[in-house]
Image 1 (spheres, one colour):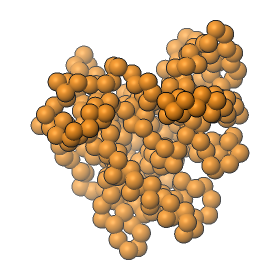
Image 2 (cartoon, one colour):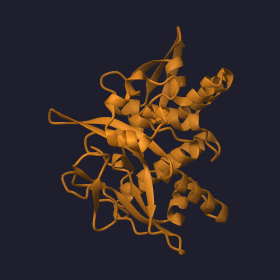
Image 3 (tube, helix red, strand yellow):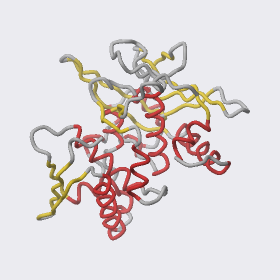
Image 4 (cartoon, helix red, strand yellow):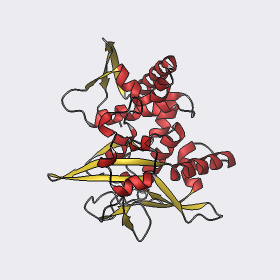
Amino acid sequence: MTSRNSDTAAPTFKFSGHLMDLMLRPSFPQDPRYLYSSRELTQGTRTDIGEDRSKYYSDIGLTASELKTIDVLALLLHKESQTTDPKAENYYAGNVVPLIVNHYGHKERRVLYPALQTSYYDIAKEYSLHSVGGKTLKNVKSILRGLSNKKHLMKYKEVSQGSVEDIEAFAPLITLADINDRGNVKVILNPIFRSQISKKWITYPADLMRRTEEANGSSRIKEAVLIFRNYMLRAISGLKDSDRITIRRSSILNVIKGKFISEGRQKRSQQDLELAIEVAQRMGIIQDWQEKDGKMIFRLNRRWV
């Protein structure tokens, strides 16, 4: 696969801010701001969801392997897209021609779906950072199939020039198409991958996965480590005058390990948080931190990329 940006590859790329926000919504306890009643969802969305009202909560919960794969797809989207002119229709649109434009959710407006004509091998190469064997390829295929079958309630607002548009869909993050016996595949990304990406994004270094693995000391990276890293990178993107952020320990635990808290495994949650902080410090994202009265104060490296 030849990258459009291969000759002048930027050391950083944009990760959708809207996508990140939904990925970082707490899983337990659920934030009542994102738990919707049937009256707050369109009839079409309710039909898509079916009878399971637990899915009326809007978030994107992912495993560690799925989080890594989303990072890879966001990087490939940057490499395979026109990324210099945000006003052009094909900005962060991928490398599939003609562009894929279709309805999203249950509104009349049609939107662009970014898409990648790629191969399982190219995805696996970015995912593993090492030699790609049959086991890695099989694992990546399985993760992609899982993502394509896993639907999320995505409900958020796009704000532009004083206007606000409600975005709502119950859909997977990716769809796989045109798979052949040579290992080629078309990955159609959910529109949230490029939603307002010229205005609301998180800056990622192109070698983010390598830095994360080196700081972690292994390619087997825990979900909590990846979520905490993402949380801190989003915080850096929002820094203004101060380079410090303050958050309650209980709040960050709800974001990174809500599942274990709900199962009563507090010790495991605390251990994973400590590991996540250590990895973020080794990566240079956090310069130092302290805790007082249950509040954690992190001094962030605003120049980190």
